[in-house]
Image (cartoon, rainbow, N blue to C red):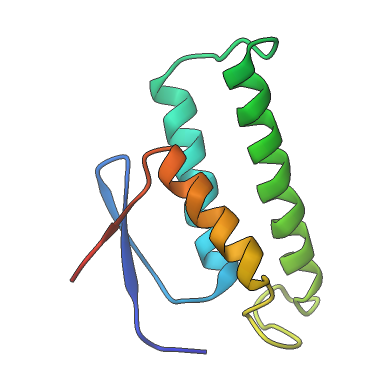
Length: 106
């Protein structure tokens, strides 16, 4: 795993993580939660609400897949920490930007 850290601005808080896919999914989930909090409760019968729910579901599925790759003590990965496909990474980047995610350049 790369020891280089990357920084994200989540709700005006600097969050530093490594390049593992699980950490990137955690940042994405935090960004989406922050977006929902700032935009109030979205009506689930609206187009925006259905899109948000679908995005949350996708992130949850990928996080669950990543969790399954972890050992019982939840601290070390059995295999690679790069478990997302290139297409999934692209899709997560689009979702991240949709909800106002910002990666800081340091």
